[in-house]
Amino acid sequence: MSQIQGVEAPCSLRKLPSASKRSQNQAAFALAAILAGAVAATQRGNDKVKMNRCGECIGVLAGLFLAFAALPAGVAQAPKVQASPLPKIVEKDGRSALLVDGAPYLMLGVQANNSSAWPEYLGKVWPAAETLHANTVELPVYWEQFEPVEGQFDFSSVDLILQQARAHHLRLVLLWFGTWKNGSAHYTPEWIKLDQAKYPLLLNRDGQTVDSPSIFAPAWLDADKSAFRALMRHLKAADPQRTVLLVQVENEAGVWGAVRDYSLAAEKAFAGEVPERLVKGLGKQPGTWRKVFGEDADEIFQAWFTASYIEQVAEAGKAEYALPLYVNAALREPFNPGKPPSYESGAPTDNELDLWKIAAPSISVVAPDIYLPEYNKYSKVIDLYRRKDNPLLIPETGNPAEYARYVYEAIGQGAIGWSPFGLDLTRYSDQAGAPGAMEADALQPFARQYALLGPIARQLAQGNFEGKVRGASEEPENHTQTLAFARWKAVLQYGMPSFGDGMKPKGNSPADGGVVILELGPDEFLVAGHHVRVDFAPASAPGKKRYWMKVEEGSYDAAGKWTTARLWNGDQTDYGLNLKADENVLLRVRLTTY
Image (cartoon, rainbow, N blue to C red):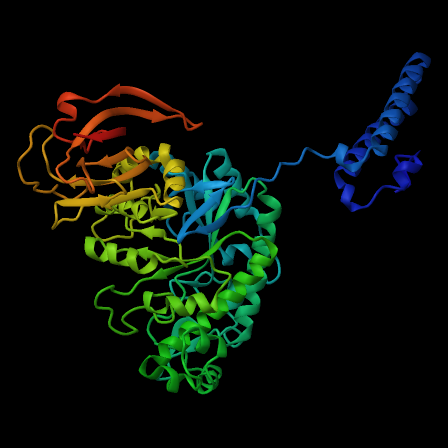
């Protein structure tokens, strides 16, 4: 561009810098346009004074233009957002922490319904999160929206989610609904669904097509890697604030309705040797799948190739942006699991955790989705997935009120995050027995717990990383529980009156109690709970009894400074610390013995 409305452009405009200085160039052209307008006005004017004044304006504008064009690119651009530390998961002495802004973070989350991450419906997500007192929202990224035309990526929904989450002071976990969503490929774009020769579905033993992708067709992996790589690359550029803490790779990957793929490509792989990495990792002898694994060979085969596929997707994304990645698991029954297809085959179920750890090192966490309301089953799943090599993260759990108390059990077992599913205001419920239309009052059982725990989430996260936190949820069949610390044991009783002692606890109906206790020092504790009586006894001092030194009710401010509101004594402590169902209190307790 050499002239603007008949005006010769200065040499500085004809020799503009490279595209890396785009912001400077755009502003320079804008000034050039103003200059051109002034010239045009001069050419139209007949009055000598008007001409002189316009000439002065032209001189000023030209000087500004030349000075601006000579500035370094960084001066002309808007100030950049200072990048925060990258979230990461760390391990110490068998305990794990999610570091956010350089410090342990406890995710008190909520996952929106599957179809709630579209722009027109985000307004029904954020108010629910605020009502819940959640600090993190889990939202899907839909492949069908993200890449509607092959190779053309639409970042608009992701950008809007980032923008609105920041405006509501919330962190995010993004869920990549790619090749799998609950074992099927329903969120893939139309150009994949319409080309089943290139992107086939798997075949079962009888040769029937099953509603699940055949991952032995290489086009599936190539397409998913390309899309996920684009997503992670964009997040790196668009989110220096680290609004996004974690990314879930696929959703409940596996197969329903078959044990494994019986396509020609899958059959050829099944007839081959088990990969050396898996054989060595599991301490097996080499051989074919059937020889090495016997009657479990079909399930293990499908699990290996599912995990290996996801590893390649995760590795491609992590090469662009090294956020922590996880996969979520549709569970099998923890006590009497049976055989697939009674549960999702090839999934990261508890019996395949070792395999997934070998196959997918880019995945930081294998996370259980717990929709088992029974206390013994919920606790068993936590035990199965909480391992030294696998931080405890519960990214989905049921939303009926009976699930709310399990946040205490999860935190007490070292969870880095916990999130009920489907708690938005779109008036949809996924659970039999859950509220038929999700209104704000349906959120209250979870909101009460988060309102109590949210202000101390950082303290709990740090304490868990140091091994100082214990917690429990009410067990319907056992109304007394104990939590062990170095010098003390906490005694929990459910269904006790606020006044009086000597009676047998009868439990709450329904069971809804729970507590977390953070050891602040050898004889000092922070107590937060719901519908439970808490007392302490010396752990190893025969003949000694608990003696309250001080029981403070209070709160922490944003900087972590404790403020005491009042001291508990007399009736409030004579029979233990009675934490009510309809009132949240935070207690700081110091103990001695007599």
